[in-house]
Length: 347
Image 1 (tube, rainbow, N blue to C red):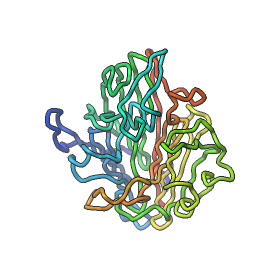
Image 2: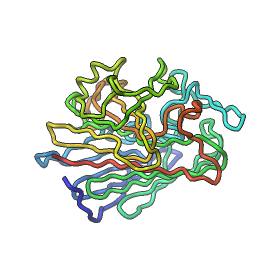
Image 3: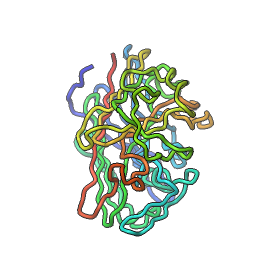
């Protein structure tokens, strides 16, 4: 389906209150084709509703019905994660000769910004043309990171396209790596699995990881491996070939800084497809390996293993500790800025 340009309707409402912290607002962006719901807690996308080939509308992202569950949200459903998405080995890094120690929250590692990262706090919001801008001040020393960081995330909806623009500035040199952690199932949230989805990722290389999911430092070609997803690949079949519980790997993209399509997922039964473009040098493809059915989601749905996929556009994991990886440090006077777009269509 061809995207149609039009005016997107935007409105906000109260989603609840966090005692001692304030109200959480819910923003709804509505185009003729897609509806997106976002809350100011963690910039979380709580719903994306779009039509299938028969004209039926389904919500295609996992999540919860109420604020209390999102306050816990141990699997980061829909959230913006940071200061640094993904893992930092042993929760340590060195900048300008000084070692910084972070909160450890994933085995021996720091994950997605720490115990109270960007996904756990309430952002300030304001309406913009076609969407909403959310802003946050992260103080110097927040979760162990240096520098006061001013961050913003802007969601805009235009026809079939949801755009996410990330920006940040800092008072001290600090690693920054922001992404959105939405879990998608194009059959509709609550569906059993994603085995009947087809995925394509435009990457000639990926990052092997150790037993703690930290990149080994090797950049390995995807060709002639189960990680070659350059042509449409049926996820269920390929998961049988991948070592371990599934995909949770960074795929290395070319031409960092230039926006280009990096991934596409198609669900033949519904006719829905999701195309992802980004300016980032990597995309983490994750097949919800650590969901186990214990979380009750929207409408009481159970979310078992492999019931969703994530495409987290990002810098490479643990880049702050790996000199050969793309630079993840933001310095005073510089602006961190990148764009990701999700395009939803039906065949």
